[in-house]
Amino acid sequence: MGAPGGSPPGEVRARERALGVVLLALGGTISVPGGARGARLSGAEITAAVPGLAELGVPLDVRDVHAVPSGSLTFAQVLDVVAVAARAVADGTDGVVVTQGTDTLEETAFLADLVWPHEKPLVLTGAMRQPATAGADGPANVLAAVRVALAREARGAGALVVFNDEVHAARWVRKTHSTSTATFASPNTGPLGHVVEGRVRMLLAPPRHEPLSAVCDRERLAAARVALHVVTLDDDGAQLQGLERTHRGLVVAGFGVGHVPDVLAPRLGALTEHMPVVLTSRTGSGSVLRHTYGAPGSETDLRRRGLIDGAFLDPYKARVLLRLLVAAGAGRKEIAEAFALRG
Ligand code: GLU
Image (cartoon, rainbow, N blue to C red):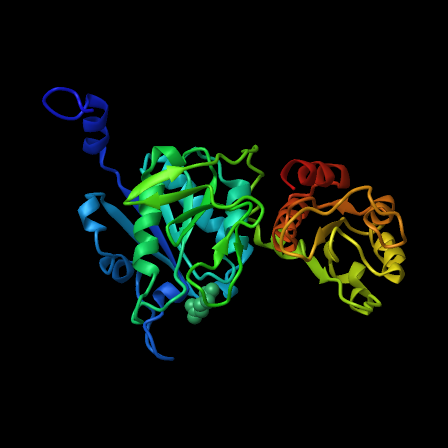
């Protein structure tokens, strides 16, 4: 309840401050005007079409950063965006929302999460349906994202993906469907929270870790090339030939609990002499194991050969973490520790 005669003084002060929300627009379906042609919608046009947003009474500082499909975003661009968002929060802004395409959102959100230094969350969202289509989901997602960015309850949770009135931890969220508006899910944990009748309800608090150093040097990032190899039936590893000459790290998306064909195991072991090799599962949820099976190509065999345990991280997120670590110049021990902590 408010104090007699109105809101408590703290609330009044917060409203007087009224620094508002910074919204950084990066393109994606939420900005596609319809049809195959035409200029993308600007951030201002996207927010103008959100019913109920103005009624929140929160000043919006909308900035057009990139206008691209999310598949064209780079690590350097995402880290630059995070730096802008972090500066805005350091300057006292009430919250930051990023709109972008959904295709790489699970990767960009995790990259942002790894380096995000603040208690206030960095909230990422987008849309599955173009703005001019029936039932376009962009407006609802933006409104929910702004609410989460402002919510005290969402603090300390790092980067969050808000979509379909659900709040997901960047660390666990996956794009699970090519067209559904309910595409974002966290198979290992479920959503951290929900937006219900406009109210942010957080049910879980993800563990937070020290932010990693955000390597924004484009040359170092470009040089930290990390490959992802999805293991398939009867895979002879031909794709891995010469990898040590072109890449500085490898993520293996193995079968089930982290297995590969026996013929592949020595090749992967040999690669660990040249670069960190991280073992993950291609299944989409669950963790790789550490010491349950012992056949050649099993998780025990691969760990003995020097592969690093990716634990619960899916292959795409493991690749994001490994690339950031390699770009920062981390050694094998540091990399193994980082995966033990965050995997
Ligand atoms: N789904 C695409 C993305 O993730 C949208 C493509 C586009 O914006 O043209 O960005």
